[in-house]
Image (cartoon, rainbow, N blue to C red; front, side, top):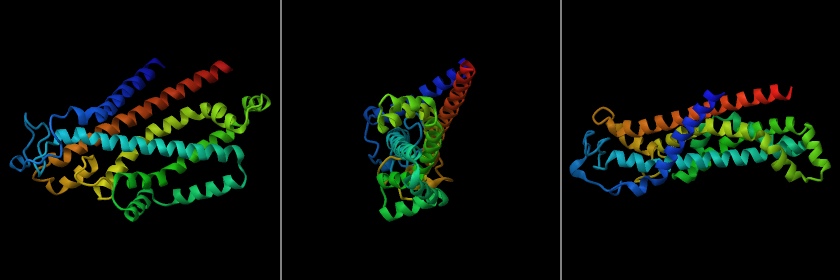
Length: 276
């Protein structure tokens, strides 16, 4: 138990560190990351430019740091919106059931039956480029899993005695759903959201790589990889630098999600053995 908790704490600190860097990076860079210096274009990594420079002479290290804000916060926003919207819909469906539940669950089946990235590409293509449109396109395909998870949990939880006690005490429907039931399924939703961060980050980067996400000259990791893909053989650092940033960030959040899930499993088992 202690070991699992320590792992969860370690990866939590690393994840917080990434978010902190994304937050303060634009304020600690010593010059504009979009400033061009053609005289120093495509310089290899050195003491002056740790990750080298791109075709416009822009420092890749600074652009990776600044790009963390767009890449990380757009991903966190996407996961937050997906989890909140999907969980709310799922809890309402699970609690009331009936025709509303049937219609919404059939709608979620439609979204789940379509390959997610293909659907996101189609929506983003219709809406046009931009990180906001990319987030919206991925939001449309990511909420159903949270809705189905929340619905299944609520269907189980609402039969417990504490819900009957809440009803007898005079609690209204909103209080029962969000004050009594939600805390009991919150851990499962958080675990799913943490494990979803890495996937959503790669999908956002994929849309930007294909020209349907962030637009130039925005510093965004997927867009930076797209801009440097033609130079993979001559100047590999241009594409490897943002790719490495995505790899590290996705790995840390995936490990955080895994460690949090393991820790929650142990806690549930201990609670179960104690109650017996």
